[in-house]
Image (tube, rainbow over all chains, first blue to last red; front, top):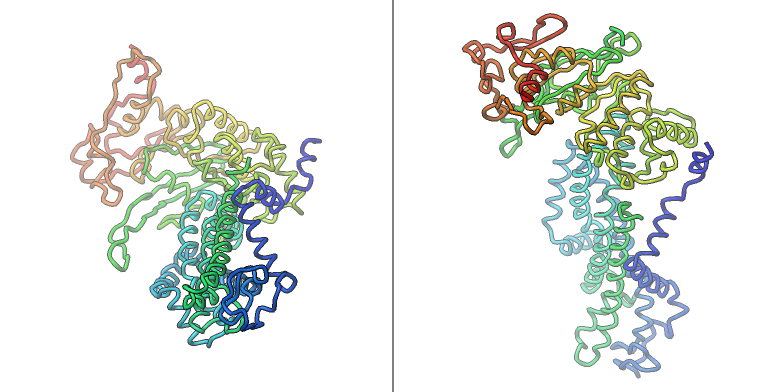
Length: 289
Length: 341
């Protein structure tokens, strides 16, 4: 019995194991590094920013990158680096809130539709109608109803990206539901709630994670689009998307106004994609050695 | 083995709808199981054989109530009381009835550790005080099925097919059931592992006093493990008898044809195979009279018109054939003797 008692000692938690594996995965590691840098710079914006992002200085309008202004200035003479640091907070917030919103409702309804055949038709027909609207148009319509502003823009983007989750999750649940371990769980008397939580959900994580990384990028882009149309973040609050769009009139004189916010968005989307790819590999126990 | 009956199946039917049209309404029915009746006695192994698509698996799953039967009754003898298997009673019956699945790969959740897979029945049924107690039980079960308890924290993909099947058996045993439905438990394994798993099943039967409903398509496996055998064709039982009686003295032409297909391990053998012509008819549109008549070499007019009923021909041997007492059919040993000659 010595051998059995030793194996009965407290098992390493799943989270710990996953984190250890994550450190070994090159793509996840690069994603994590990029994202932590971006998140850190957003959190520490007040300490890092060389200028007040709202402070206008008309003597240095549209100044190119220099020692004083590393990333140059915009048409009002505001420091672009400082604006980017502060804007990162808004972009991250929009991404997190919109994706969490869509994730919660999308997974809930997706699992219900996939698992309970009686609900399937009802939920999926509504989802089809929902999907028929282009995401961005739907977001605009929702903001038009709720009124402009950051909170409403986040809700709008979340609502608009929910049906994609429902579709993906339902499909994954349908295929998992046919596996014999679901039949086995039923045969040993497990109730639906238990089957969904411990058998269905863990096995549909991979597509959910991939979709979330993609949605994160598009949520940030959609929110930026809304800001551009004056429906999202209200000026003068700095926001990456709004900055990129604002630069379009000055693209000939001050290319840096568009490039730096664009690179910031690119880095953030890239970071989430790399992390998502790595997470998928790590969360799949078949990949564990 | 005593004579007490443990499971009674009467007139079991399962029809699957064929959905058509825009509104998906049934345009026909696949009669997967079409009026099956049998009894399983305490401590015995009843083999259920037949080719693919004859309804063996559907029968097993109806008994476990994993799918709802269209018609018919299933009764389980729970400590002397006959309990009908239905939506209300099934959860209490789960402790007494378990199932082992065919595919050891898809029957274990790839995201769960072995200890949690085997402990799940106890958790779902509220057996055992805490995790530690349940894991101790898991270690015992793993030892009972020939696995090392040190491996309990591993994931299913770290095991071979035979080991995975042992895990499935340990999970089924966790509730200490009386009846285990074995749904082709060895057909996905290679032959040497098949023998190990079959021997394990026999040992466990003795140790825990189990009763098996053993579903298979491999006749030699069924001959090895069963006490009695039921032969299914197109959703119906065509013949049922004790294993020696059935293999030596088949009464149904389909059973005879099945036996002739058992390979004989002799390269010089002159095969005297009975080749069945045509395919199995569609279960959505079965032939008239005896379902087997279009492929039966003995078929007569009566076979085309009236369906035979399963009836006793002596010694517990039941057969559904109009010509049962007229035909002199060959048993397994005759085929192998002829083949050897």
